[in-house]
Image (tube, rainbow, N blue to C red; front, top):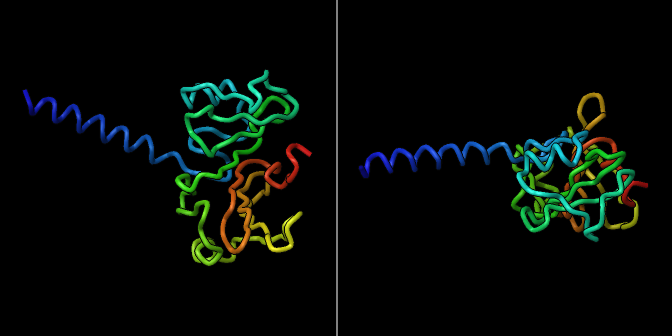
Length: 167
């Protein structure tokens, strides 16, 4: 009987580990949640409700939603009723290549090399942004850099370039 429980436990542990392997930041989104999805579609995949910071109904034209305590440090920008970008401030959330909040610019250069495009920070003269764009520039990942460290990661459509919400 103990053997059966062991195999059942091993199966579920292995299944759970495999499921978590897909939860990375990519140019299209975070895990199975992709830019272009509706909030309802994302909630089905996340298995919890997304809420606005003010806990009001979502403004379909421009709003932010969070994982309401389920996945702290991962927020979603909503434009025209769809997720347009994912914003990450949690160092436990990584890209497929292993880059994360808190990493040095040297580490990003080691991981991504010449793929990185650099732009000056919009407000901080001591900061800048590193971008990784898909070949058609429709989706990408932006690393917000301050003091040679990743402060925040943005992933999704061209809205990753916006610095004041949906403006």
